[in-house]
Image 1 (cartoon, rainbow, N blue to C red):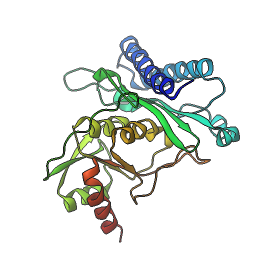
Image 2: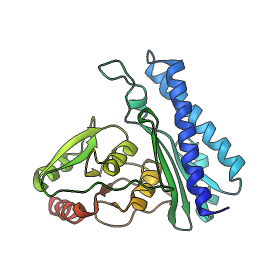
Image 3: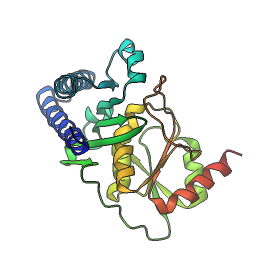
Length: 259
C-alpha cells in the first residue's frame, strides 16, 4: 500500500458514491424530498462502508451516517489510520431543484484519510458538476487580484458575524449549499474565502480541507488554530478556508469582531 494508492482510492470512492447518488436522484425523483434524502444517505453510506471494509479492512472509519455507538467506538481513537467520510454533504441541496427544474449542483461526497495525527489523503466529489477534487492532483489555486473579494456562506443561515466581517474587510457574500461545495468554490475560483461558525463536525470538512491544504490554501479554525481530526468529540464548529493572501486580514478581522 502506498500513499499514492490512498489518494487514488479516496478519489475513486468519492466519485463512485457520487455516481450512485445521481442514479438515486434520477430513480426516486423530487416529489418526496425526505425520501430522496434518506435513500441518498443510506445508499452512499453503505457503498462507502462496504468498499472500505473490503479494500482497507484494518482501517477505522468515522462516517456521518454511522450509528452513535459506532462513532463513539474507542478503538478509532487509538487507530493509526481512520477514514473520515460524509456520504452526502448537503442533503437539502441534493433533494432540491433549481427554478429551471434541474437538480441543484452544490452538494458533495467527502472521503478523507486521517493518518497518525494528520490528514494524508482526501477527495471531494461534486457529482452534479461532473468533477472530483483530490489530493492526488490538487487544483491550482486561482490568483487573487487585490480589491473586493467574495466569501461563501450558508444559503439559509449565514452567521451574523460573517456579515459583519464582510463589511469590515470589504467582501461580498455568496450563498452556496454544502460545506464541501463552499470549500471547493474557494479552490476553483468562484469565491476567495469560506468562513463558518455555526456548528459542524469532522466529516463536514476533513476531505475538502485535505484537498485545500494540498493545493496550498489556508485552512484553520477562525482563531487561527489548527484543525484537528479523529477526536473523541467529532464536533468541529468553526472554520476558515481562503486563498493564502487573504488569511491574515480575515483572521485580524475576526479577532476585531470578537473583542
